[in-house]
Length: 388
View 1 (cartoon, rainbow, N blue to C red):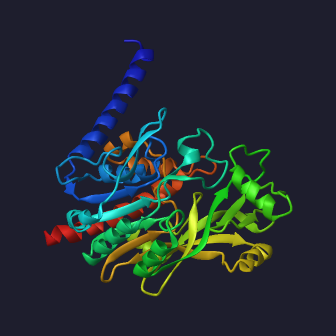
View 2 (cartoon, rainbow, N blue to C red):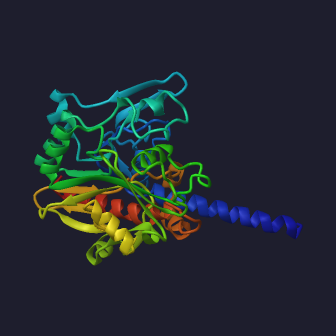
View 3 (cartoon, one colour):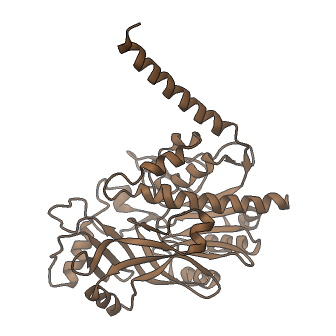
């Protein structure tokens, strides 16, 4: 047989064997029954981006529902359900007050992946989501039943995981204050995000509402040209940290303490490029990792003028009398391919190549969020498995 044919055949056959072996190694791993309550109120499209990456971890590690089936990213969650984007049909699934105690007793843990919600300009007006930060709400925000459910889960000592936008708008101030008191948190009112280019002439994707608000507050001026960090206060005030002017390095970092890196198998430092909030903790919790802005003297002065500092919590943990985690960033927002969850070793493969490319947010997912969440789930599963 011609060598030109033999070599490709051998290569293809070898690749198929590797792929099949990887799938089979994943398939024979033992199942682990874990009843997980997932809340995602921010689903303006059908990709379920705000909780999809968490489902990847559940499926990859063979966590299954009580009925023995795998978690379905399109169905197995509470919150907003888009039905038909063309006709604007939607549904939502929420807890009614008389169900709270029973549902809390049914589930082993809960994860509030996103509570921001869906808004008129996202749902009814295509391609208009960058026009302004908030319009009339279609659905979203934490309500009294969400709070009571968390309270019940805490009293039953179930694992509670929450993250960015947990108590930001449109959650009202009364619910937010009750949540802060319950978990020992204190939101500063500020959220922020890194942008690779603040020059609106070169970056067509830069949110127009940020430019509009900043110009309203600064004599119609917008002179930024480099990468930087945009900070937004709940009352609309904007602060811009630009690389070269205020920052020695534009990208925010997450620094984990030594015990955290050893326990969760995560890097000591990693770039974080998604949305975050500036939230502080009382002494009842542990700080596992911090955000850090690499500010110069001018940047430090700008932060202090708003009573802010360049270092603030990224991961808050409580494990004494109940189990609670707060992620200060939009950690679960990662556009992973769900089909890759069914191959053993894919995580290691993806982690090796995730550093390729500029401003690659997937590096955070594979090297940080994925091992962090996997360890949290595995440790918790062992504790409840012993009880059963």
